[in-house]
Structure formats: C-alpha cells, structure tokens
Length: 261
Image (cartoon, rainbow, N blue to C red; front, side):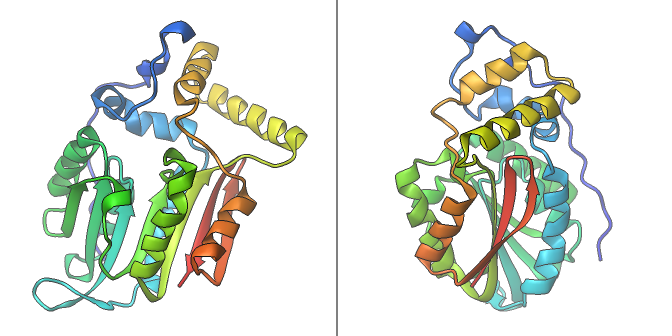
C-alpha cells in the first residue's frame, strides 16, 4: 500500500472571488481565479467533504475487482472521477493503491481545473495510470469500469441532462461496480429546508466566512447550482436501472449515495 501524500500548492488562502459586493458578484465559473482558492473553498464550504474522500479507497477495495484490462492486457480496476476539479478523489485513491492496481480517468469541463489537476497528479503519483481529460461529461462515452465517482457535479448540469449522464454511468459499470454520488440537496419540507440552510450558513461562519462572502457566493451560484431532493436522487437512480442504492452519508444538506450495479 502506497503511503505517499500529495503536495498541493496554492497561494490564495481564502476564496476571494466571493468577497465583492453583491452587485459586482459574477456568475460562478471554474476559471483560474476559482482554481487558485479551490482547496480552501471546498474545505470551508462543503461539510464532510474530507470524510467522503477518505471512504473512497475503502469502497474501492470492497467493490473494485480488477475486471478491466489496461493497454498492456493487465487486469486493473478502472475508476472514473467525473467532474474531477483538481483531482482530490483521484489523488485519494492513488495514495492508497499500488500503480499496477488502478487505471483512473479524471474528467472535467474546465481547462483551468484539468491543467492544475494534471500537474498535481503527475507530480505526486507519476507511476500511476491516471489520465486527466478536458471534456463535458455529457459528451463522453465511458469505457467499462468498476467504480464511478460523481462528487458535487450533477448539481451543475441542467436537470434535463442528469438522467442521460446516469444512464451512461450505469451502462459502463460492470456487474458489482458502484457509483458514488455526492451532492448538495434541498428538503421538500420548507421549514426543515430553511433550518438546514441556516445551519449550513452557520457552518460557513464558523469556518471564517463573512456575511458578504456568504451572500456573494450564494448570488454567484444562483441558477448555476440547481439542487434536487434526496428522494429525487434515489428515484433517478432507480429510473436508470440501479436496483440498490442507499444514502451512506449526510451532513446538513450535503449527502452521499452509493448505487450498486
């Protein structure tokens, strides 16, 4: 088991793109400015993100059974990291598996993200078979695989496109493979939802966000990040063919679901 730890370098300590007044806050995009502060932004604004990442190698060891072949004909576990951003999920997996055990394909639509992810992954895990691809996950036909990670990605796609993405994933997964789907959600009950949202803002305040930063980011993400209820996620997974799927993690309005092929 490899114990090497990734080195992530970034100069921006806090997510400054969201400190501007509301009338100047631009539409959220994963450009170079966001990339510079992304690790800190995720740490301070996504409850439980570290715990979700930490469980990925545990899931992979249980459900990835070396069903695929690499270019040399060797049996490997192929894993997709869809909407990979800076490759945190890919790095977490690479840090717990030997190079010959995994083939990771990390895909993101943002060139700024994939450029930095490619650098980080090649610097920290040069021996691992990790391909970083700049593409829209809606346009990619996935190869047969054992595991797909979809962390905080589906929520950025138009609602009408989400079923097709999940169908693509379901069709690519081998029998026994899994999808790990992590999303921000909203509750159907308005009073319950309001409580969760306010506690989420309290979480961000506790992590050093100012009221202007909280308001600025909320404004920037309006009509960009569109959440579903947890029930809607499970219904969609059943619709595309997953017979078993369960919510294994929830922290406030953030959840992670595992679906079994």
